[in-house]
Length: 132
Image (tube, rainbow, N blue to C red):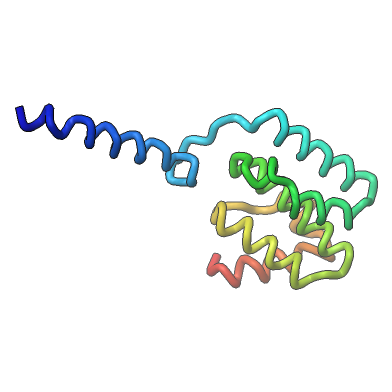
């Protein structure tokens, strides 16, 4: 009889805990929303077109990217970091790489990216900052 009295409270707690999965507490990522996919595609097009300032602003202000699964955010942040480096904002480039490494401590650049003269050394510095 006592268990039935506490059942509504227990269900409430379980519902609240289930809602925590959107806070990065779950190891499972859902698929990105179409809006997030479109935002990333826009950033990729801007980057390919050499619109580095626009990439920086789009990633910084996009609610769709901010709410996207970690893997999509990391890809957007990487293009933002590259854009900072190209624009010679090496401190902001490094801080963005640190942000990526805080999301995924195993993140690495592809060999051709790691060897890039502008952002390769900055990424190495970011790894040192986070103790990687």
